[in-house]
Length: 117
Image (tube, rainbow, N blue to C red; front, top):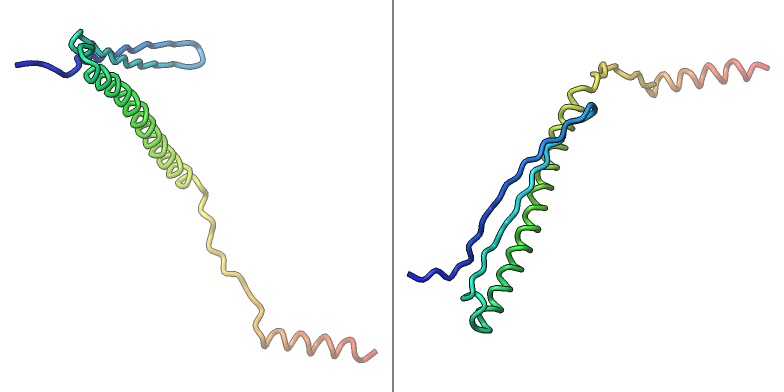
C-alpha cells in the first residue's frame, strides 16, 4: 500500500502566566506538515503539494476566525442576557390623558374668565 498523503503532526502548548493583576493562559497550536521526496518528484506532484499546503493554510485561518467570531457572538449574547436581567423593573404607571370633554370644559372656563374683562 502506497501512502501519498502528507503526514501532519499537531502540537499543543499551554503557557500559563500569572501576575498580581491578571491570569493569562496562552494556547499555541502548531501544525507540522512532513514532506517526503516523493512530494517533489514530478512537476505536477510538486504543484499539487504546494497547492494543498496553501489550501490547508487558507482553510485553517478562515475557519479559525469563523469559530472565534461565533464564540465571541455567543459570549456577547450571554452578557446581554445578564445585563437585561440586571435592569430594574419600571413600575407600570397609567398615564392620564386629557379627554375631549375635559378639553372643551377647560376652553369654556378659559373664555368665561378672560372674556369678562
